[in-house]
Length: 76
Ligand SMILES: [Ca+2]
Ligand SMILES: [Ca+2]
Image (cartoon, rainbow, N blue to C red; front, top):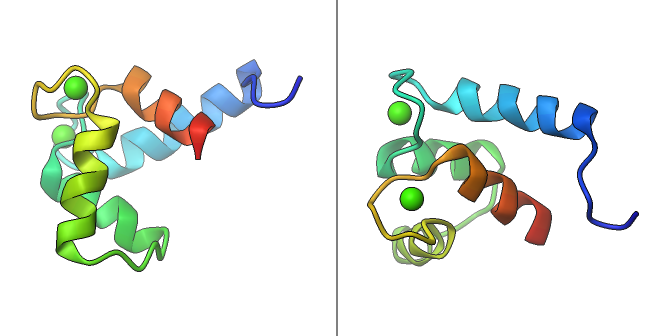
């Protein structure tokens, strides 16, 4: 099935998402995203992280919703 996520994978992603959603408001903000990248050892500079954030935040509302996170995860 290639990059299609099954329910188990989605559940795992949900756990990751909630782990990094430190203030538990249901979205990942810039600060939380920076910590996520650091934890993944993505080795991104701050400028690259900013670009990455804008890439993930496809509806440009300044925060990352779970569905945006899932799409990003699937595509990378
Ligand atoms: Ca949050
Ligand atoms: Ca968004």
